[in-house]
Amino acid sequence: MSQVPRWLPSAPFGETQVGVGVLSAPNSSRQGGMALFGTKTVPDEEVGLLQPSVGMGRVGRQLKINFVVSVGDNFYQAGLKGPNDPKFQNSFSKVYTARSLQTPWYSVLGNHDYLGDTLLQIGDALTKKDNRWFCDRSYLLKHNLCGPSHTGHCHKFVEFFFIDTTPFVDKYWSPEQKRTFDWRGIGHRQTYLDTQLEKLNSGLSSSSATWKIVIGHHTIRSLGRHGDTHEMVKQVLPILEKLKVDMYLNGHDHCLEHIKREDSTVHFVTSGAGSKSFQGLRQGKPEDGLQFGYDGQGFISVSMAAQDLRIDFHDALGHKLHQLTLHK
Image (cartoon, rainbow, N blue to C red):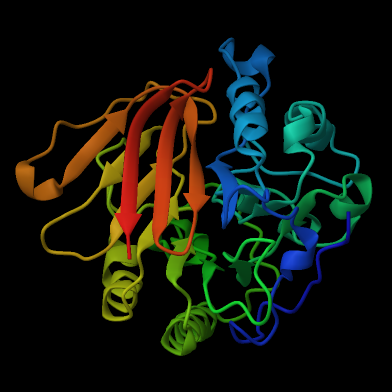
């Protein structure tokens, strides 16, 4: 497997892309690509529950997936403490062992990751231990949707814009905050946030992708335990709506959700059910736009093609619970 190229988080979206050459090619019988999305699994001894890695392996084999996305909180409870922290093996390398999951993993940082060594997660040391691993603060992944029989330039593709959401949340910076966050590499907070918003706005504005998907750890809209992240609603959501983003995908709340509100063009998908689920879902009101909610362990799979994008919501065993299909 080729090593994923890296670039500095300060580089603009679109200046460098994760090349599709690191992804396995689609089957000749279909066009597009397949991916699994979810949060990482906490080891069984911590939760005593079935790990979604079992179902992920089965669905991954059925779909012949191209890659996996982890939406943050990669290592509980407080990130990684050093390059030899056993949590990397015990909740990643030794858990996701199915053959279908031996494919690139694209990750973002969650708030629990910021309680450990964030520079370790976004550096090269973990990739040298397990070459599936890729994590950075913000980056772009482009994946062509033309089948292997297509010749010439492919004009149909999906772009995933990964963003770093933890620095947006005010309470993590509060003087009353008792936990210690690893803000190394962030610099001045407001400058970092302004730069990230400018990059996101610029990248989405210049994108000609068939499908535009933004991925971050924190919720924008959710009826889970954490609910809406107000800083994200205020600062990120207007950009997504203005620039016609198809879907915002997040973790943070430990459940599966699909929200589509009448007052927004964006589909909000929560896939945070890798572990520590059963924390409750609020019933909500009709205007909250909850199309589906599952307060249990699970994950989602995404099937991408030029005209259709299908999101399947699965329980831990891989059984299908809900399906969302978008057309263009």
